[in-house]
Image (tube, rainbow, N blue to C red; front, side):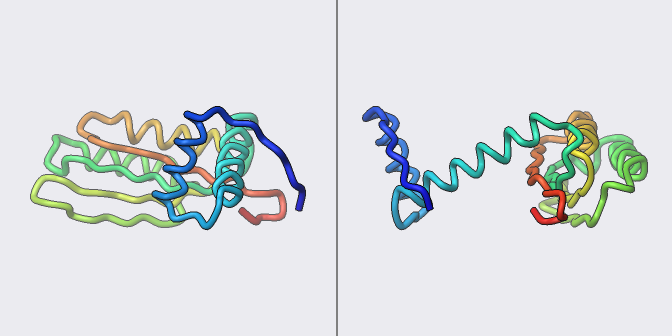
Amino acid sequence: MQRVTVTLDDALMADLDRLIAQRGYQNRSEAIRDLARAGIKETTLEGDAEQPCVGALVYVYDHAARELAKRLTHHSHAHHHLTVSTLHVHLDHHSCLEVAVLKGRGCEVQGFASEVIAERSVRHGQLVLVPQRADGET
């Protein structure tokens, strides 16, 4: 391991200490390592749209919305090569949650997620991406 000295202003250090307390990190080094990994992951995917990745698309929608289920099914079938697995949960009488585990090029996964999230009556949507290394590991 390498030792690095970093200077942070008081406000940023207070924010970091709050994060450490909220997430239960054992020390500041663990928190900073996790934040560095998250930043590297984000910039890796932003910098190379062809980068292979795995992702989880989570969205909540109104199942009674006119033709929405049909449109969502159409999107899924049009991108079937990206889908590894899906989970469908009935939250209440009007709302369903779906989780789609996706695998493919970053640009394709992000494009599919954008199409789904942009559909009328999809209330919430978020995509979490993890880059996949050339050897297949994440």
